[in-house]
Picture (tube, rainbow, N blue to C red):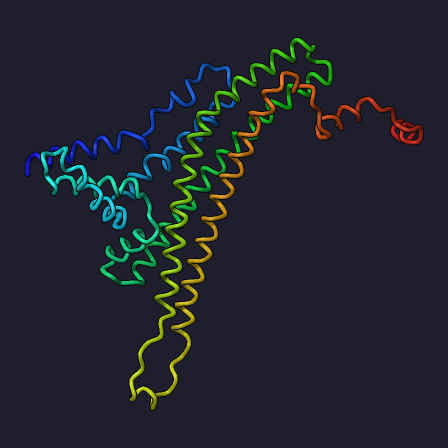
Length: 312
């Protein structure tokens, strides 16, 4: 028994510190040396990404019923390594299954029901509370990646404007562009990390969708009627309306989670696309209409009528 406990503790430690665990912020974004005006935005993205990439996984691991059940069956296969201790092997397999199974859709809802002692309304309230908190967290990471994207594009566009206006010579523009490219290259590690966090977000999203469907099914089940009930007056639809409203509210929350996850993924992809721009050594020459119109407005002479009216 003691050997089983020791090995189990070691297995949990290994699982939590390998694969899904972060190697540290500095390994992804480095340190702030003052040369990156967007470092604070990058750091904020990383702080919020950690929640979904590492912390959230550990939070939802406990009580993951389906993943643990599958892991227990497979874990017996490692019993030979434990001196044929099948019990220890299955137990460690359960932990591994819970981790690798992650936020399995049905397990989340079953866990909420179990926590609520099969009180479905209490379970529904708990899921809705989770989703509201989820939406708040997703809003924060969505805003953070948006801020990073706009900060990087602002850096890029300034180089292009300064070159187009003659403020920077070609050699100066090339130097500034290379510096920007190095910053974009540094973002790759963080964006890859964020991409893994997004996969966790999608798993959570699936769990909420499953829970929402389970709620609808539980509310839609017809109640068995007794013979004596036929003589009773029809019941008011108020209670039914309330149940429907709660389910409808839940659907709205699920939709918000789905939309936010999609928004985070889209903005992450947009930020990642700047990598291709940065690889073009003459990318500073690419001027779009948003950059050229202000310059053209300064260089094109006003019509005679307009000049006359301005001088009056």
